[in-house]
Amino acid sequence: MYSPQRDNEATGIANYVDQHLDAIRAAAFGLTEAQLRETPCRSELSIGGLIKHTLDGMRGAIERLSGEDVTPTVDADGVADYLAGFVVGEDESVDDLLSDFDSTREQLRRLILASDPDADAIAPPAPWYGQFEPQPIRLRYFLIHLIEEYARHAGHADIIREQIDGMAVPALVMTLEGVPPNQFFTPYEPAAGTIGA
Image (cartoon, rainbow, N blue to C red):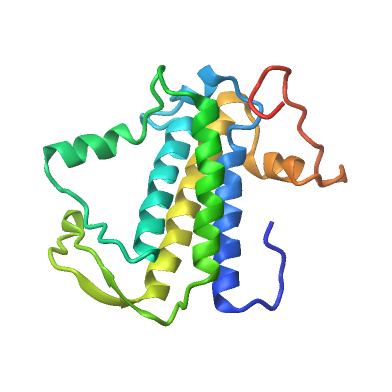
């Protein structure tokens, strides 16, 4: 949890991004690889798919914060690649996915901490919203969008996890953070052989 503190803006943004990435990552804790791929709701989302999609998003954010052009390809191949980013295939290593998530997350955090939210930046086109031209923005707009995006997926992950085994993601995060038991919380004990056990 990002506890109340008097941080500068970039640190505050980095910590809120981290808080939501904690939740997305923690949603896998104690699952089997099969459960990570399950789609227990009416949508086709899985915990693994959300982790993979978030990883793709972090990579894109790193490219943008590094000054690279990340204008999305909006054609049949681009859409197919985007949709494939929500599925962890049977041939994909879950260990590699989680390791990539962790290392990419660290790189993103460093870039956010080094950023100037007031700097000029460009938002790429978003034709799915009817925005066909790049738009001038302050970097703050993009950084706050990261919080919005990861918060949305953390909520998705929480709902999916509760459908799989009834566990709420905040309790998983608190367990991983080593919060001792209290009248509101009992640490989760993952089954042997599951992710993070």
